[in-house]
Figure 1 (cartoon, rainbow, N blue to C red):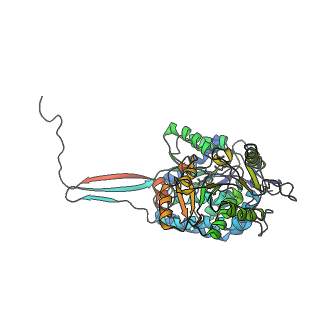
Figure 2: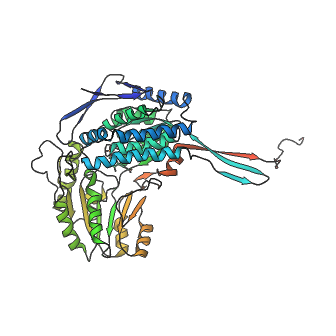
Figure 3: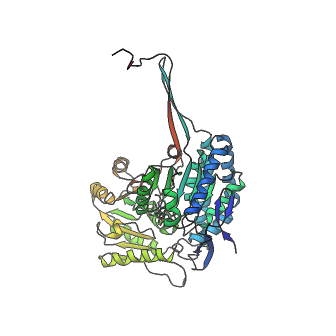
Length: 490
Ligand code: NAD
């Protein structure tokens, strides 16, 4: 059986103490692979390898070389798309058609940032005859990249591509519930001719492999995607060395549907927006707010659609929702459903285990009504195929409900009224607002969360702001006054 190892300094290696952990197939519960279980010693070796590559290879200084190599990574991802899809489907339970899209997006991330690598430039601030000021941007050094288990390949590419494009080297710590596609990514990066040590992987659990990476004194920046509570822990531990952090955290994003919207399209977007990727999507529109005049009719149609979603084997191209990632996560999601019932909400559709799929972490997509804003299922991120719906009356209440959670990642707005759309877009406290649109992203735009959904933005130039250090150089073009302290005898 294949062993899934760490990648350190260009070599695939077991962990220092030889420990492994198991990853299982969410669709069957079957054993999938043994993976090296890293600890502080492995992290230290990987950081040293990344540091050496940063100092000794031309990676940090050769932008053209980086662009060419990352372009080859993008080609490799497309060439091996089938392998990535197979691994991702068996490791995460993502439906095969959606996993294909994720692999293509991962390739786009590499080709996009490959092109940007050659455009990395500074700015000038001339003061004619007096000063020429300009900025230099350079890579920071060894980056620690920590990723979650949902859509692992896509999220890894979202960090690795800009990090390497700007000349850094890195250590990636993939999530322990879906570690396998990172290994294929490591193979593709090596095949693309990226120098040894530029890209390293240490597998393992958060507490034993992630924490030492965050605490390592020679890792000046940490890009993290995961839960808000984990983000807080990481910030606390990174504070010791005053690390630069980028935090892409949880969400509980509202979808606001007004009676004047194109309701057919809104319905499609509501269903896809929360139940795609098995509901395990950070930007899921998991709180539906519908204008009261159309609420009953909209919910009736929505309920029919949710009940008809095809749940099943993720390798079947007809499947729309596959199994949840892990039995523990399934338990957690079921706990939210039970809690909602106990608080008086109605689980109108789904929420049970489907028949005929024993062994997998399957859950029927759930639609919950009769909720109150303060309920846990409304306030907290469930991170599964669970949608809560409530009516609102007027713009003011829509905004109050939409903004009434601690998260602020995304918001979706459906209205045909131009002025209302812009008013509401400005009033929604979210990092991204999609108007009459599902979650379609232009790679140049900033991505990130407001409130407890994150710190910082990544995407386009914003990624380069995070992954580079800026030095301002101020050059005098002639003599300018310099106070003469100590020049006159006392
Ligand atoms: P998680 O926070 O449990 O784990 C994320 C990563 O952090 C894993 O690799 C884990 O091993 C590691 N980790 C855990 N404890 C750590 C510690 N003390 N120190 C260092 N690393 C540690 O999150 P998850 O359950 O894997 O992912 C789901 C969460 O991710 C959801 O909240 C979801 O919204 C969020 N997410 C956010 C975005 C975004 O862009 N905002 C995207 C995807 C997922």
